[in-house]
Amino acid sequence: MSDSLSKNRAPSDAVPSRAAARDGAGAAPTPMVLAEDVHKSFGSTQVLRGIDLAVAPGEVFCLVGPSGSGKSTFLRCINHLEKIDAGRLWVDGDLVGYRQRGEKLYELRDREVAAKRRDIGMVFQRFNLFPHMTALENVMEAPVQVRRQPRAQAAERARALLERVGLADRMGNYPAQLSGGQQQRVAIARALAMDPKLMLFDEPTSALDPELVGEVLDVMRQLAQDGMTMIVVTHEMGFAREVGDALVFMDGGVVVESGHPRDVLTNPQHERTQAFLSKVL
Image (spheres, rainbow, N blue to C red):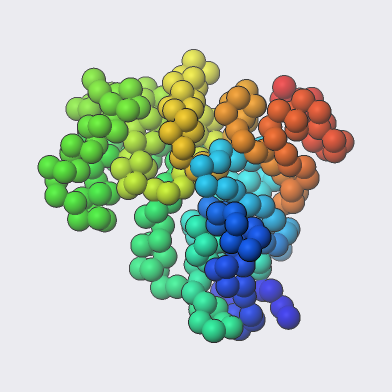
């Protein structure tokens, strides 16, 4: 039975049911994210070569590794910004990008993918704010345009979120009037405005000056304390050690080592992990 997914037609192989995404006979909660043998290539370059991992609800899951190891690509596969070539991905028990009917999979339409993506917040390296909108308007935009919230309701929620990320005094500022750290905090508030069940962070501090990193990490720490499920691609090992519940070291498109962040960072078992950490710690 082939596990490959065609980009042009729906695969016809059998797939696990929603119950199969659970750990055990229903005793444990459905993983928020479950990956089984995920592959992804760009042309002849294999970027992901069989990723298996599970992220529990409320967990802060950190992905670390060298550039080109596949971390960001895997993150983009979770919300179907990239289509996987083989394997399976579930978010909260639902297949990513596909629907199961009987023993067959059918690729979702773009509109259906977009609808499911609303439940997944993503914060990129670059802030991608609308330059012609104030911080408040940036945070309001998606709830108004996508969820059709009344503007007054969206504005009230946006104000609360900007206050939550420490920008109560910057609501009327345009992105060009904000520091990089402030812009990234607006981007986090914008993602939270859609009330996501899962937050993805793709190296959210890598584009910031060193003195601005802390203010973004502080917001992420608060989200962790509030119970938000988070997958964080990061080079901030201190954050991973302090806040993370699980850590995966990736290299060459595979999971090399995984465990509790303190265990992996303090006593890595694989020589590749040891070599990488010796350069970044």
